[in-house]
Image 1 (cartoon, rainbow, N blue to C red):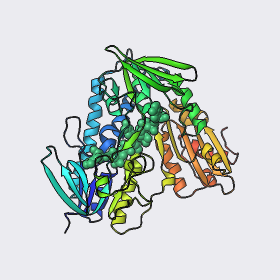
Image 2: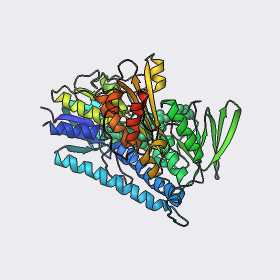
Image 3: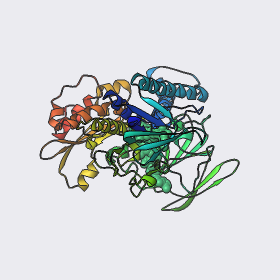
Image 4: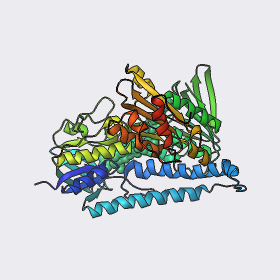
Length: 472
Ligand code: FAD
Ligand code: NAI
């Protein structure tokens, strides 16, 4: 007799969603999570709710308002005088947003009668888990018919720039700055570098991004990536490509970053340094080796297309397995695994996972880029429509960016949709649904879009695939 039908290890968007779906399906479920809030109190929701998606979006929202009010209000005839940012108030608001959402998950657990076990879990043989809560001698063991591992990920630390929690920080540190740094350095030109770099840059930090590669946003369709880069530079972000970190020197006054590019070595002086060089899976201390749970060369848990590990009855989902490190990907895997345990035949369509980078304007895409299609030798047609030709974008003063639709040259099936523009994160939903239903560009072109909306740019880009846009 086991204690639970399912034990979920980790309470992030992968784990807590899996637990809720298991409970909905009538399975006796426990979720073991060691996440804590800023006061050290247990807090469900994982990285996403506590130190990831949600707090970063809260700060992006505040900093967007600040920047927008300063730079765009005058054109509307609104004067604000000398504006100030109260960083403490901004941080309190962020924490309130986090608290209400993490508290919401605790309520959902209570509603679904999910047992929340607070502490650090370690896998044992025969689908048992040892939980250490607080003190080392405060140990308990639980058994289950199935285990779902959803232990998430942690920032990569670079040997040249070890985190000190004060001046050289990871994303969690950069979400919690108590004041706007005068000079902020960012190592890494990925998603976190751009989003948190944008937050502090908008609030007045002189922000420099050191990007190791020669290409900006190499994973993004390069037509959009170029436009994004130009706009960010125009807004004051200093982006240095091909900049390889050499060393860091800390003094009482500043951090000196030495980096090398094609022109030799350079020095950059900053007050705070954010290192955002990717994340690694949390598999070091979950007992994987002891029970023979197979990991890949980079430490991710090895799973098949159904998130099954090499051990019977043990599944793994989210950041701890292959695929993009995204909250919605983790959640969908959680739902699918719960349904599989309950005997259903669910599927996760990895080809239609949307990606969003919350700069302003936002960048969002689904499917393949022009560069990927070219590399795969697929013949495609491309339709591009600029927001400059969209009525609502003019009314809103948000004319930067474009929609780009890529469709198979032979079948017209949509292969990729790329949006750079205001509210791209919301607009991309239509494209995801279209691709999920295997739509053609003609399907989108024949779909009526409300006027005046930004979504009309998607309609026009679909028309442009066939060379018949109306407004350009
Ligand atoms: P996690 O959220 O990492 O949760 C894992 C949980 O398991 C944690 O609570 C951890 O404490 C716990 N845990 C780990 N080991 C154990 C153990 N042995 N015992 C018990 N508990 C354990 N993604 C998006 O889709 N959109 C965004 O806008 C976005 N923004 C982000 C911004 C930042 C700054 C960061 C850092 C990430 C962001 N992400 C975003 C990524 C997103 O947060 C992750 O992809 C997502 O949280 C992964 O979910 P998960 O459930 O796999 O793991
Ligand atoms: P990333 O993978 O997006 O970018 C990492 C950057 O660091 C790259 O530019 C890479 O070239 C660089 N880099 C790697 N090693 C380096 C080194 N040794 N020296 C210098 N530069 C180096 O990772 P990031 O920004 O840390 O984000 C982690 C993950 O979190 C992302 O992969 C993403 O999945 C998730 N995330 C998602 C968000 C969203 O969906 N909007 C927002 C924030 C994070």
